[in-house]
Length: 102
Image (cartoon, rainbow, N blue to C red; front, top):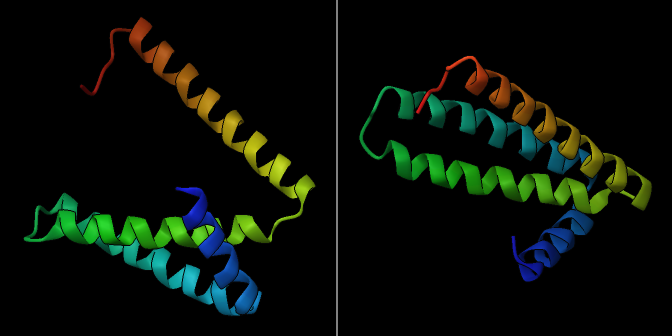
């Protein structure tokens, strides 16, 4: 996400209450679940709807991150790193065992 896009997310987050935006976040998450289901079933326009749902969900995540104080942001990004590293460890283990989805 660009700095301009992040700034816009912050402006939106600052304009609305947390509860209002959390309700929208919940709706967007539900729409993502539906979009993924449609992609898995290979329905017409599924990829287009998936990209739209992903964009909506990304905006909602950025809005919530923009509400965090510095300590919360540090914790958030540390958690992301932890989860990425854990997934990479799993991939390395799978590769060592000759497993691959590719």
